[in-house]
View 1 (cartoon, rainbow, N blue to C red):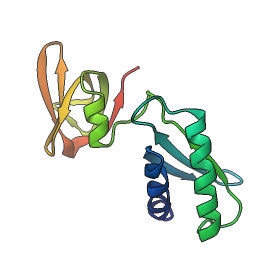
View 2: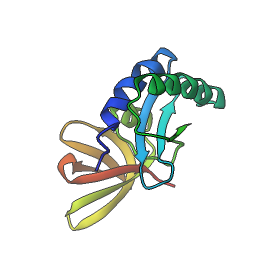
View 3: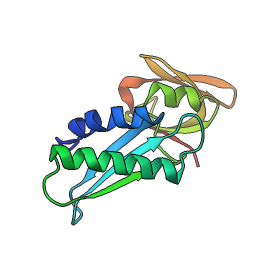
Length: 151
Protein backbone atom coordinates (compact mmCIF):
# COMPACT_ATOMS: atom_id res chain seq x y z
CA UNK A 1 0.00 0.00 0.00
CA UNK A 2 1.29 3.43 -0.92
CA UNK A 3 1.84 5.91 1.89
CA UNK A 4 -0.68 8.79 1.69
CA UNK A 5 2.12 11.39 1.41
CA UNK A 6 3.58 9.84 -1.75
CA UNK A 7 1.29 11.65 -4.25
CA UNK A 8 2.06 15.01 -2.60
CA UNK A 9 5.78 14.29 -2.61
CA UNK A 10 5.64 13.29 -6.28
CA UNK A 11 3.79 16.53 -7.05
CA UNK A 12 6.53 18.51 -5.28
CA UNK A 13 9.48 16.53 -6.66
CA UNK A 14 8.49 16.17 -10.31
CA UNK A 15 8.83 19.83 -11.38
CA UNK A 16 12.12 20.18 -9.48
CA UNK A 17 13.57 17.07 -11.04
CA UNK A 18 12.25 17.81 -14.54
CA UNK A 19 13.71 21.33 -14.42
CA UNK A 20 17.10 19.64 -14.03
CA UNK A 21 16.43 17.48 -17.10
CA UNK A 22 15.84 14.37 -15.00
CA UNK A 23 12.92 12.00 -14.37
CA UNK A 24 11.32 10.81 -11.14
CA UNK A 25 11.22 7.02 -11.35
CA UNK A 26 9.86 6.05 -7.95
CA UNK A 27 9.15 7.50 -4.52
CA UNK A 28 9.09 5.28 -1.42
CA UNK A 29 8.47 6.34 2.18
CA UNK A 30 9.85 3.70 4.54
CA UNK A 31 8.06 4.37 7.81
CA UNK A 32 9.31 1.14 9.39
CA UNK A 33 12.75 2.72 9.87
CA UNK A 34 13.76 5.18 12.59
CA UNK A 35 13.90 7.89 11.48
CA UNK A 36 11.68 7.17 8.46
CA UNK A 37 13.41 7.19 5.07
CA UNK A 38 12.04 9.03 2.05
CA UNK A 39 13.71 7.58 -1.04
CA UNK A 40 13.33 9.26 -4.40
CA UNK A 41 14.74 7.41 -7.39
CA UNK A 42 15.71 9.59 -10.33
CA UNK A 43 17.00 8.91 -13.81
CA UNK A 44 18.96 11.02 -16.24
CA UNK A 45 17.48 10.14 -19.65
CA UNK A 46 20.43 11.68 -21.50
CA UNK A 47 23.23 9.77 -19.74
CA UNK A 48 24.03 7.74 -16.65
CA UNK A 49 22.60 9.26 -13.48
CA UNK A 50 25.50 10.83 -11.63
CA UNK A 51 26.26 11.56 -8.01
CA UNK A 52 26.04 15.23 -8.96
CA UNK A 53 22.48 14.69 -10.25
CA UNK A 54 21.54 13.09 -6.92
CA UNK A 55 23.19 15.87 -4.90
CA UNK A 56 21.43 18.63 -6.83
CA UNK A 57 18.03 16.99 -6.47
CA UNK A 58 18.66 16.32 -2.78
CA UNK A 59 19.45 19.96 -2.02
CA UNK A 60 16.55 21.34 -4.04
CA UNK A 61 13.97 18.83 -2.81
CA UNK A 62 15.08 19.09 0.82
CA UNK A 63 14.54 22.85 0.72
CA UNK A 64 11.02 22.46 -0.70
CA UNK A 65 10.08 19.69 1.73
CA UNK A 66 11.29 21.79 4.67
CA UNK A 67 9.47 24.87 3.35
CA UNK A 68 6.15 23.05 2.89
CA UNK A 69 6.50 21.09 6.15
CA UNK A 70 4.53 18.13 4.79
CA UNK A 71 6.92 15.61 6.33
CA UNK A 72 5.85 14.54 9.82
CA UNK A 73 8.87 15.03 12.08
CA UNK A 74 12.42 13.90 11.41
CA UNK A 75 13.19 11.86 8.31
CA UNK A 76 16.11 10.86 6.10
CA UNK A 77 16.00 11.93 2.45
CA UNK A 78 17.72 9.57 0.01
CA UNK A 79 18.07 10.42 -3.66
CA UNK A 80 19.32 7.58 -5.82
CA UNK A 81 19.33 5.98 -9.22
CA UNK A 82 17.19 2.87 -9.54
CA UNK A 83 19.93 0.96 -11.35
CA UNK A 84 19.29 -1.59 -14.05
CA UNK A 85 17.82 -4.44 -12.00
CA UNK A 86 14.57 -2.64 -11.54
CA UNK A 87 10.98 -2.92 -12.46
CA UNK A 88 9.61 -1.50 -15.69
CA UNK A 89 6.66 0.81 -15.11
CA UNK A 90 6.44 3.68 -17.53
CA UNK A 91 5.98 3.70 -21.27
CA UNK A 92 9.50 5.13 -21.49
CA UNK A 93 10.85 2.06 -19.63
CA UNK A 94 9.18 -0.31 -22.06
CA UNK A 95 10.55 1.61 -25.04
CA UNK A 96 14.07 1.97 -23.59
CA UNK A 97 14.37 -1.73 -22.72
CA UNK A 98 12.82 -3.20 -25.86
CA UNK A 99 14.89 -6.24 -26.83
CA UNK A 100 16.14 -6.83 -23.28
CA UNK A 101 15.45 -10.01 -21.32
CA UNK A 102 12.68 -9.48 -18.77
CA UNK A 103 10.92 -11.51 -16.13
CA UNK A 104 7.16 -11.15 -15.84
CA UNK A 105 5.13 -12.30 -12.84
CA UNK A 106 1.43 -12.98 -13.27
CA UNK A 107 -1.42 -13.46 -10.83
CA UNK A 108 -3.56 -15.33 -11.53
CA UNK A 109 -1.28 -17.59 -13.55
CA UNK A 110 -1.45 -17.07 -17.30
CA UNK A 111 -1.57 -20.32 -19.27
CA UNK A 112 -0.75 -22.18 -16.05
CA UNK A 113 2.45 -20.19 -15.44
CA UNK A 114 3.18 -17.52 -12.82
CA UNK A 115 6.63 -16.58 -14.18
CA UNK A 116 7.53 -15.70 -17.75
CA UNK A 117 10.90 -14.82 -19.25
CA UNK A 118 11.69 -13.54 -22.70
CA UNK A 119 12.89 -10.64 -24.81
CA UNK A 120 10.68 -7.60 -24.44
CA UNK A 121 9.05 -6.68 -27.74
CA UNK A 122 6.71 -3.98 -26.52
CA UNK A 123 3.59 -3.10 -24.59
CA UNK A 124 0.22 -1.61 -25.35
CA UNK A 125 -2.96 -1.11 -23.32
CA UNK A 126 -3.85 -4.80 -23.63
CA UNK A 127 -0.65 -6.80 -23.25
CA UNK A 128 3.11 -7.02 -22.83
CA UNK A 129 4.74 -8.79 -25.75
CA UNK A 130 7.68 -11.15 -25.38
CA UNK A 131 9.79 -13.16 -27.77
CA UNK A 132 10.45 -16.58 -26.23
CA UNK A 133 12.84 -18.66 -28.31
CA UNK A 134 11.50 -17.17 -31.52
CA UNK A 135 7.86 -17.37 -30.51
CA UNK A 136 5.77 -14.28 -29.82
CA UNK A 137 3.81 -14.30 -26.57
CA UNK A 138 1.24 -11.70 -25.54
CA UNK A 139 0.65 -11.60 -21.79
CA UNK A 140 -2.47 -9.63 -20.83
CA UNK A 141 -1.76 -6.56 -18.68
CA UNK A 142 -4.67 -7.50 -16.41
CA UNK A 143 -2.76 -10.50 -15.00
CA UNK A 144 0.73 -8.94 -14.80
CA UNK A 145 1.93 -8.07 -11.31
CA UNK A 146 5.48 -7.02 -12.24
CA UNK A 147 7.88 -6.70 -15.14
CA UNK A 148 11.55 -6.63 -14.23
CA UNK A 149 14.78 -6.67 -16.19
CA UNK A 150 16.33 -10.14 -16.03
CA UNK A 151 19.67 -10.65 -14.30
